[in-house]
Length: 397
Image (tube, rainbow, N blue to C red; front, side, top):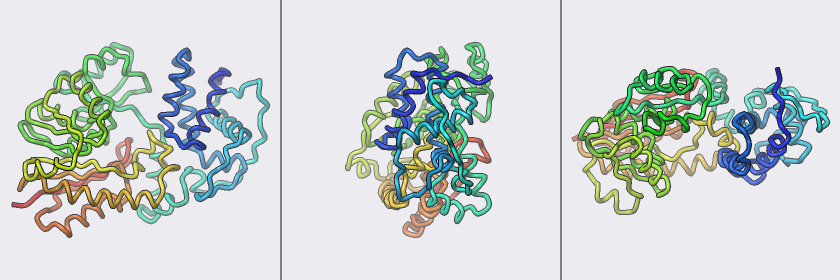
């Protein structure tokens, strides 16, 4: 049976799409703002609104072409009211939602779709993918065009993954174990309202992101620097693996992210994380003092299109080149903080070789006192999660 979309929900969608495609705001922030403006919406309506907007952003190029327009990477689409309603009509048919009876159904004459149209990606990204992955590109981009699954990481200071699944089931949330500490929800749910979350039994964290923390191989009593920590998901994971013993320095350029990390650490009963806003003197003060360094560097974010689908419309080849220079600079500057025989993990949420192994090889060519120990690529077709890259380098005596 098809689902009826209530008029207020439908009327808010063009506003959100205009903010995303004309005003260039990030989709997650636009959706968050609309949900705050409409606090009276029920959970069903909020779910329909958010998932519909994300689906349209994910399928933007395909829907534009199906609506009868010509696609061009170089030219912004004029987001007219007519186009918005055509795209909403196409999306509603795809989701088997009822078109509001107060609106006349638009006439849609879809053109034939090529691969980039069907996968809804810009031409420049399709060309890069074909060059790097060949026939495997189709499988990779198809995997990245899926809706993101919700993964949780069990706080092993308090609970095992199996115990977490049981506790969530008692609160009406069904999930299953997928890794040593990882749990995947069987269907989407607002887990932040659960008693388990308030007790600090878990954190929401993609499975691939959890694997990066495990790849660092943190040990109790070590001194670890998470130098691009953000809100600290990997720092929290490493603290659990260290049994809350030792020291993790979590730093970022954004103080508000570190404040959020402090709140999360308190809820998780973790006290080994020290937060520091990065300043120009930190590297010099910590030179040669770090056992393990995690550099989850700024990158294109193309590996997390499942949860941030608008990245493919906002990212450009020029911006990727700029990020590559930043990545190279971070590797060179921060590596000096690692002790002899210590290790450094370089990580990205990207599948592009130019941001991944090429950066590592370039660093090794310029630094004879380092060697590559291992590397790993996490791809959605293999792990059903976001795409990540990680490489572990060891500093020689």
